[in-house]
Length: 591
Image 1: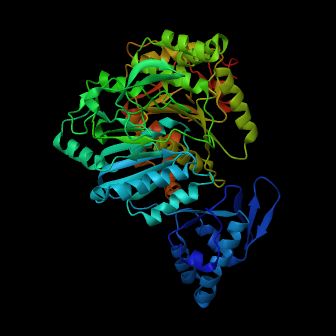
Image 2: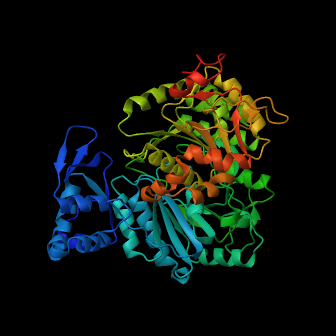
Image 3: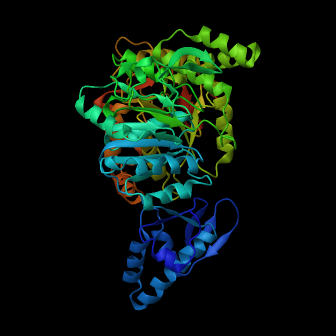
């Protein structure tokens, strides 16, 4: 958020919530509050009022509530502390001690959500959104507009969010988990609507088409098909009703035209695939993009085949016409890589059990040459064969100042050939009790996984060590795990001298009672139970720990006895403090 210009500006933002920058920590020396920098030796001395204000800057308490709390504590100087509060917060923001969480706009339920994902394309979003308002007023009361910003720290992010203030049914969603055109999946996850229409953030829709789309879905309550329409060309006459399943210019799909699409009043008809600049379906019918997709490309053909394999169709609705801005004279603000596109295609083929690799290989040899194509395909195939590919997402928890640990983990990930899959999670630091930060970090990752609609998520801590031949053993364990109804899967843990028989019918899976959370996976069937039972804030967590001591203890005593918790056999991940408990056969083979 940009700097606040005056005290008056700040008073107008009573709903904003100041939060400390992670580099700064509050300490008390006798009765003197001080801010210490964790990255250098900087110190800020605070007076008692400022010390109290800082304790309220938690990212959850808004400025209005802080002002009220100040006046209740400093009764003899209520006017003075209220007046000084804006100056103090403004100064701290300028000194980069705090930032402000902007208030979330309350969502309303709409019949149709029109969503778009963007990456530094304010102009595209602006004109697409305003064209909806200008040319589709008849549906204004039935639609919500959702903008997913894939670069919320970019130059245009603030202006994108400000549109919320001007447009009643406009909602801004920052998203940084992955950078990809497949983040359009988030639109369906976030939409509070019966139907979802997803468009590129530089698409214009023919007047009347949105009204007809709503009416079509209302009239066909059993329709779970993917709905698309003809793309208009710049001459406003030529159209492309679909794509043909052919390779061209590094993309799967070549523009085609079916005569049945000429008349906007014609009946819908089935098509093989279409460009993904505009597509719609019931929210409940959406099947999702593969969460492993990255970068640009790979969705055309993939999502259409996914709907077909579920017994549904892709329909062309002749009235649903749209105009796409292809020209980008100033270039796109993100990198488009051939390796990302090939990776996405191959990941999609693998998910859908399609044998299209030879066709892809032949096409890309013509585009980028034989050697680069072979190198990329070989690398992707190794990743697909890697047992870690099983997990929808992989997170590693790491404190911001523990840069050496993160570097060491990156080297381990590189050896495992999963460095591109792992997402760093900035650990929640709680100096007074590390178990608070550990539990909150795990909880937040599971919350992210639920929001993304993941089936499972692997969580690693930054002191995890991996068995030298982990690939072989993990592959065997996962093969058996897939046939189990599981909640938590441990790659390692503290066994406390216990031994267990193998799971019935298994050779590489054991139902153990153990602790430690340095390497474990959570299944989506367990997400809600975990989020409901583990508190989300520090104060509540302190109380929770009085009963449960730590998240690994809670898992061991409250969850493991229910069943559904397994550990790989042999153990494939350890950590320095428990290496002594590992079997003699493997104890010196973790690195």
